[in-house]
Length: 183
Image (cartoon, rainbow, N blue to C red):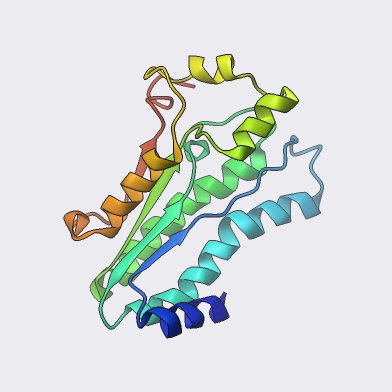
């Protein structure tokens, strides 16, 4: 991660935006999950955000910047058999707020995006495997559709831009009103 930040600076000249977008979900209850599975989810979903930010923030400090952490609606609502994922994505919201407070004076804004169901290859694999059906997922969204990667990207572009110069320490859902509807 340290090398990735150094390479970005070497190739681009500076670093002013970091998007922490990684996540894995291993299903099981707290009884079913092994300690290794729990730790793996926390490592990818939380520790890696910490480490990328740790190395990116010093590079951003001279000019300021924007860090965008991709969390999940799982930070606000839980599904069965997702305790480690839910815990890690909830903790990411707390980390986002803490980083915004600690690095605001450096002109570094830190926000989180919390997507709901988004059309991705992973979601298509879930549909194919029967984990969930497209019809079930559509019922969760009052807007009547599943989100697209563009829906998330547009918000990330806004948060990275000067148009969001006074937005920091918050999380924004991109979920077609899924969380508003109680799902």
